[in-house]
Image 1 (spheres, rainbow, N blue to C red):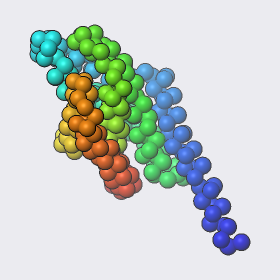
Image 2: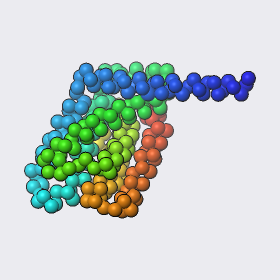
Image 3: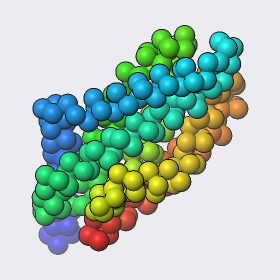
Image 4: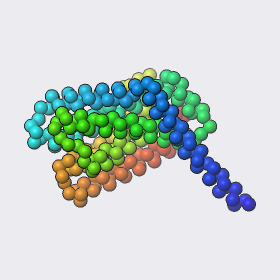
Length: 237
């Protein structure tokens, strides 16, 4: 009887943890569905970045493929920064963040819920931006390998960004502070993602792409694990 009690508690704890994650994700999705502020602001910013790059670079068609991966990830990072800043600012200003922290759930569930909802918004913007970018640059970007890299890079970006935005939102200069602390941290993710994306677009062999993909997966695991471990401390401070 004594050995079955901990097992029973563990079995009942797992669904509650998953339900808490689902509740946070559902709350964010419903709030965005009603306001349509976050995705629209990210989308407008991303379109402007692509438009500026298109006319600022003015490259020959042969050179556009070489710079596509860099321009894409600059667009994703800047648009994602807008999303992270906006999402956490709304939570803080409306008192939702304090309510989440007071809820009787594991703080890790709050963290993973915010990561998943932010990742959904970011992937939605990225999926819409690919055909728009392809229209401007006359490039077909629906490459399965490129889509995999975008997914892996977005996971690492949102994992780190959610943690740092939770830290920056507590300050008065949150709009300025977040990119200052976020961009240096995500440099390894961006470099690996740009390298893998460029090689997929240029048709490189899988043996040449594998190191960048492996590094990207490893960085996702490392950054997510670290953010998971320190999230509770960050939001308490």
